[in-house]
Image 1 (cartoon, one colour):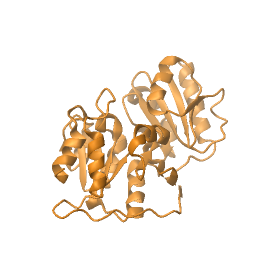
Image 2 (spheres, helix red, strand yellow):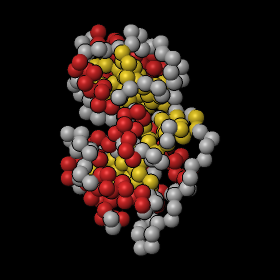
Image 3 (cartoon, rainbow, N blue to C red):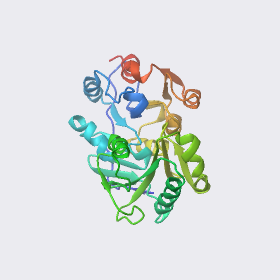
Image 4 (cartoon, rainbow, N blue to C red):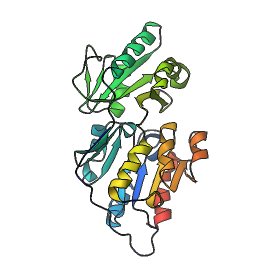
Length: 284
């Protein structure tokens, strides 16, 4: 695990009368975004108001940093991006922390995916480096899914031989990731995390890598406590993140384990649940 030496500026005191929340962290897909992948109405106004109140807003996603930075380009200055399920955390282009895989691990996962493909499973690997994501599949159906989350991606002949720090390998299964791909990756679970992060996605990461650990490192750097942190999530890769905040919200319709783990329930992502809850709790 690595971390940047540049200290982060602390967050200013909240206005009188408002709950002492200084950091709002939200998952993207199934949480902030609706089921069509659209940002909720009023997002940019809410972000401006949070900034005015001295509250830091941080997207926490399985998406790569470049994708998140593009989506929030107009308001990205000063924002912390918890990317790649916590394996890469960046602020203003400067790495705050990362948790790269040991050399050779990604290559083993890629070879396992190749075996699944040879057995007839419709799956593809996305090898996630700090500079770019890398894929061997070049069919449009697969690339259409890759582009949703990895704006910086390259098609390569051999994804087992890359000149980049690999922080995660994500697998897209056109069927059920939980029923097919994840069980096939069971041998990696002895030494690494194999996390079902969506209906079709499975991530292989270091055991030390998750959104929750990334959030705790960020809290320490900023001097922010769990009691001053609000978190929103909907799926299994959000569980550890919910544990790092006293103001933890599961979205209506979230995975049952997420609802059980969170302290509170927010309206669904299709009902603008994140922004409505922020407005209610902070009185915006």
